[in-house]
Image 1 (cartoon, protein in one colour):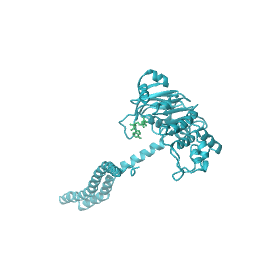
Image 2 (cartoon, protein in one colour):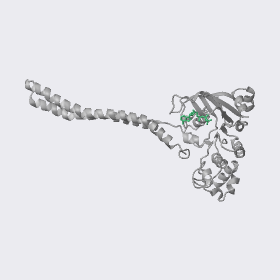
Image 3 (cartoon, protein in one colour):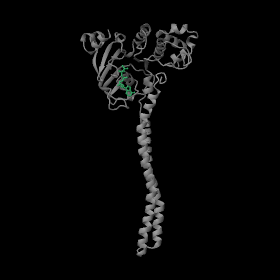
Image 4 (cartoon, protein in one colour):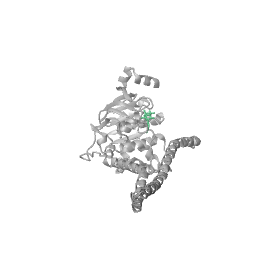
Length: 363
Ligand SMILES: Nc1ncnc2c1ncn2[C@@H]1O[C@H](COP(=O)(O)OP(=O)(O)OP(=O)(O)O)[C@@H](O)[C@H]1O
């Protein structure tokens, strides 16, 4: 990508720029380390010199014997060096204790496993007064006092200007991050208290750019459910409008679609990704601009497949093109980290507010 855009010098510049701050810190640290390392033997020798000077004075005046001077000297030799060495280790000790604390923090984390591991989730999603900022930009709140309630088995379209936090909401539902305030609840339970692997087993994501893994088409679909049998894989492909084109490939489901395999079109890859999602039979389906990279014809085929698999599942649809969410049970228009408008497509159009303005722009 860097080479094809011919911007390697710019990237090198950026790299050098990002190294400036660590370099400054490293220089500061080496100064401190150098001074303390030099100071430590210096203090040791000074204390010996002081011992002989003052001890010699006291011995001369007859207050102590020469033997006492040597006794204190040997006490200084054996203890002073240890104290000086311990002093030069303080920064390492502080670093070590921080590292150990973070390890224990991870070990102490508790995920509540479901009482019955076979139990399923229904798929109700609630965001309760959520504040969220990405850890790398803590000062920039993406969601602020954000609340949203999606009933189990219904679909909701998320719309709003680019960067308003739609994909962030999808990431929070999958618990890729924890909220700073408030809670994300699934069926009334805080996601932070759920066993995250168990919970993610009930979710499936179809994003704008489907990832193809090395292996056959079959492997790529089964990635959603490794224990799936042939019948399940074909059923999922049929539901995703993919069976026909897969069967027409020279090696059918055995066709290699990895890095050195067949070149699939965007729409074909997307349908394999949908089959991969559907084979999981997810209670929560997350569609992050799943059709926005496709041409009109592919979009229609993929949209048909999506409409079919959405029924009966809680579905979050992030969309720029509003026609993809026309049939959603409700639509939330986001802005300034909150839901500004919510309703069905006709309700929002009648309201003649922000959503109406966006829809008019797209016509
Ligand atoms: N990993 C991250 N670290 C820091 N900031 C991020 C990260 N991901 C996204 N952001 C920022 O969070 C804000 C919301 O991003 P998000 O991708 O959720 O918006 P969006 O509404 O989905 O945008 P789009 O419609 O363009 O896809 C943006 O300002 C983005 O720059």
